[in-house]
Amino acid sequence: MKIDLSKIEGEPIRFAETIGLDANRLDPTGTIGPMEVRLEGIVRPVGDHFIVDGRTSARGELSCGRCLESVDWQMDSTFDLEIALADEAPLDPELALGEADLDVVYLEEPLLDLDKLAVEQVVLEMPIRVLCSEECAGLCPRCGANRNVEGACRCEPEADPRWAALKDLAGGTPAE
Ligand SMILES: [Zn+2]
Ligand SMILES: [Zn+2]
Image (cartoon, rainbow, N blue to C red; front, side, top):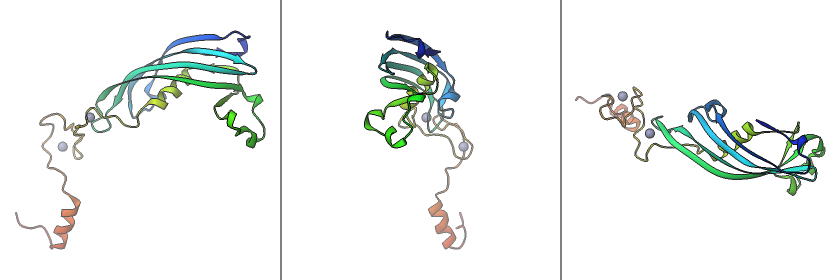
């Protein structure tokens, strides 16, 4: 959904939306399935600008950084931003870097895209890596089996490359 800012005439507008975001709009490698995001807040005209205050909450499943199994995740955070229309953007980039303008978002059209806002807020909060548990054993580097499952595979442990180098120095594989 988009909020038409040109329709705001002096009065603040409230919004409250539940948005389903596909994994490919978030982090496709770390997100499993769609994430349900609740976005609510208020848009207030202040002079030529708009101030948006809101709250984002989301829940979904991320994938474990070691074994790729799903891990429940949820977030709840608040945000505030200032919006100006692009035609007001200072032409001189030096001016655009003024302290007070740091958090201003310039929009080409007077439309506040709530889906996009939801994506930005969720991505900001998403951890770079989650683990299903601190002890997660991950996947077998040889066959890809989930080593948290007992008896997942019968692969030998990876040879330590440092020992392999020592064996080479000793002139071949020692007899077993
Ligand atoms: Zn795991
Ligand atoms: Zn294996």
